[in-house]
Structure formats: C-alpha cells, structure tokens
Length: 55
Image 1 (cartoon, rainbow, N blue to C red):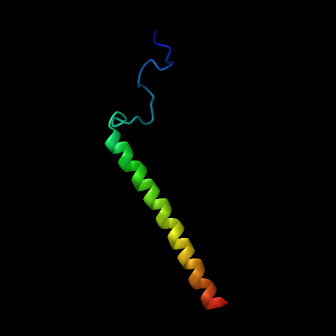
Image 2 (image 1 turned 30 degrees about the vertical axis):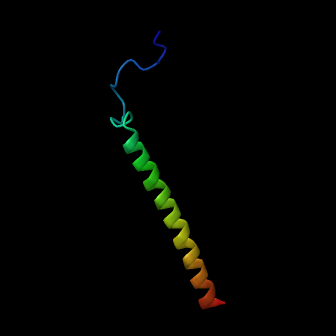
C-alpha cells in the first residue's frame, strides 16, 4: 500500500541522493554543530574583548 502523495520528481526544486547514506548525513550534522559552536565561541570572545576595551 503506497500512500505517498508524490507521483514523480517533476517540479521538485531539490532532492538529495545521499539520504540513504548515514555517513554523509552524520558529516553534515557534525559540520553544522561545529559551525554553530564556532559562532557561539567567536561571539563570546568578541563580547569579552569589547567589554575589556570599553569598560
């Protein structure tokens, strides 16, 4: 029983061919977490140094 409303890929804006590869999904998650952690670290570093300069 196929209850999916998708009949074909015509008109699709994006589809990912690596969805069945857990290593690629895991890599994307790790990269995303690293980018978020680096951004938070740099924001904290900037705020600390700005407070020392202006405080």
